Amino acid sequence: MTIEFLNLIARDHREIVSQLVLMSDPSASISEQQSALEVVTLGLTAHAEAEGVVLASFADIPGLQCLIAQVQAEHLAQERALSRLVCAPLGTPCAYDRAADLRDMIEHHARKEEAYLPAAFAMHAPREAYARLAAAFATERLRQLGMLHPSLEPESTQADSACR
Ligand SMILES: [Fe+2]
Ligand SMILES: [Fe+2]
Image (tube, rainbow, N blue to C red):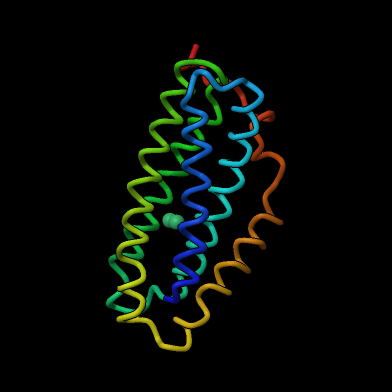
């Protein structure tokens, strides 16, 4: 894994976390929270899907299998937490709590990815694939953003009755 790949994923992590910090702040306006939710929804989905596609191409390498499986499992947990957040009416304690929960989840996940993925890929991935990781991730991330359907946007979701 090149340093550029690490920089790319770390940049996404910081952006997603910063938007979730805003979403968990009751002093932020509804408009700001709406914008932040759109960034989080599209950004996190594209980021995790792109990581998933890129990492899956290494899933048959024994030294990487356990770490990749952990990352993929955490992506599924994030997807569920994001769904809960999207269904929470903005400006409610429920939305603040769910944003904070997802923020904590992403921060923990990001620390793990940034600490362990580079070392594991440097040790186990083929050298030529390792060198192409940044480009592969960037390309897949753009492709995912292009494929994201408007139904992912929060306006089209039903409010969660658990938040009322
Ligand atoms: Fe990530
Ligand atoms: Fe991830």
